[in-house]
Image 1 (spheres, helix red, strand yellow):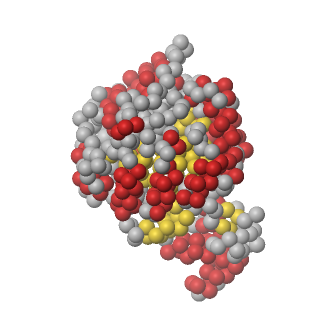
Image 2: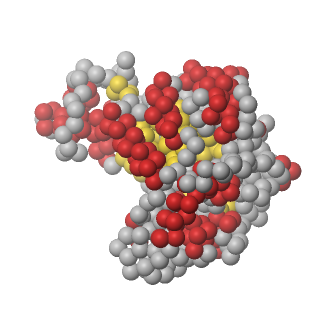
Image 3: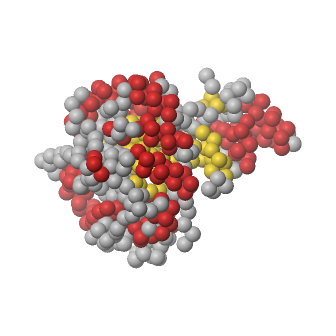
Length: 98
Length: 360
C-alpha cells in the first residue's frame, strides 16, 4: 500500500457499486468483496476501510473515522487509505459517486 | 496434498444455443435436451457448491437463456449465497426477462461478442440478425443497471476488429472486456486452419491490449488471453487442475475443466450420484493431475512448475498424445517446434472454411 497513486479529491465520495458485494466467506473464515470475475480478500485493515464506504461519507470523513478508530493521526493514515481505495477504483471494484 | 476449496463453478445449464460459433468450447459430442438436469438437481448442486466454498457461479451453456427455468435457477443460486454471473449471447433475453433476473438477484452479465458489425458477428455466430438483437439487449442490460462485461473471442478472421471491440465496450459503459484469442479446444479444434491467428496478429493484439489498458485505466478493465500456439510458456490453466474451479455439464458430469472429456483415460462422476464435495476432494478425475506427483520431465524439476502447473492437460493430450506431458506451448517441451510449425501452417491456410457448431 505504499506505491504512489493518483490522489483522490478529499471531498469525493467512494461507493461500492452494484455488482460488488461484501461477503462473509465462512468456509475460509474471512471477509471478501465479490465482484465480476474477481474475489478480493480483505485483511483487517482492508475490511475496516471498506466498511467505512457507504456512498455518503467523503474521503476526508472516512480518513477521520479510521484515525479515531485506530487512534492514529489522520495525516499518517491518509496515504494508505488513498492508495487502497485508488487501487480498487483502478480495478472498477469501487466507484466515486457522481 | 492439502486440497483447497474451489472458488468458482461453471454451470453449463444446456448445450442448446441459437448461435453456432465455430470456436464453441462445448464438446463436439453433446448431450441432448432430454438428458439435462432438472431444476431441483441444479438447485441442490448450487447449495452444495456454496457449502463447499464456491463463491462465484458462472451460468453458461450453450445459451443459458434457452433454459425456461433460468430465473428460478438464479434465485436459488443467490439464495445459496453465490455470486451469479450470466454468460450469454443475449439471444432470448427480453426486457421483461431481464427485469425478472434483476429481481431474482442476478449479479453480473457477460455478453459474448462475435464481431463489431453485423456482417462479421452474424457470419461468425452463424445467426442472421443476431448482432442487432445483441446490441438491443446490451442497452437493456445496462439500463437495468447490471454491471456488464463484453467477452470477445478473437481469431484470424476478426482480430482486425479488436480496437473497435474495446471502443464498443467503452461506448456500452461496460466495466470489463475479456479479450480471448481463440483457445483450441472443443469445436475450435475443427477450425484451427480457419481461425489460427498469424504471429503478427498475435503480437499486434498484445500491443493493442497493452495500449488500451494504460489509456483506459480506471474506466475499463481488460482481461486478456494471448494466442496460445504462438507463446513461449503455457497458460496457468484453470489456476491449476482441481485447485480453484470446477465445471458441471448439462447432464450432471463434474469436470476439472470444460475440455477434460478429451482425455480418454479419465472418468467423471455425476452430481446425480455423488455430492459435489465427494467429487471435488475424492473424485479420480480431480486427483489425476492435482499437485505435482503426475509430472514428467522437464516439468518435474522446472522452476516454473508452481507458476503454470505444466500448462494445459487437454492441450498436452491434443498435441503430445499424453495428458501428463509438458504443454507443447512451453519452450522446454520437445514438441515446441511442432506447435510452432502447426501455428504457421494453420495460420497461412487461406482456403480453410469455417466448421459451425451444431446444437444437440
